[in-house]
Image (cartoon, rainbow, N blue to C red; front, side, top):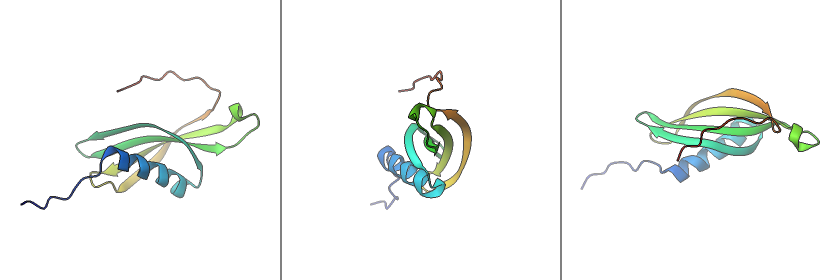
Amino acid sequence: MSSMPCQPKIQEILERASLMAEVLLKKSLDGVNSLNKDAEGWLAEVEVVERKSVPDTQDILGRYEMKFDLDGELVGYKRIMLRRRSDMEMVEEEV
């Protein structure tokens, strides 16, 4: 019987990305935009509210790239974009 460690599943990484975004950045999570796995680990893109505004269409959102290793440990993150909530963006959906 092999005792290979169980790697985290996508739902677990989604929950970790959501939690780490709020804990590390000390900002409210707006959403997880993408989550993908490759040979080195997981890559998540999350958006947080950088600055709340009235009306909320003027909120400033920050998009962050978060890297997790295959065991689900966060190994790095960086902000890759700032935008107003009302700014439209072209997004390619991957399924």
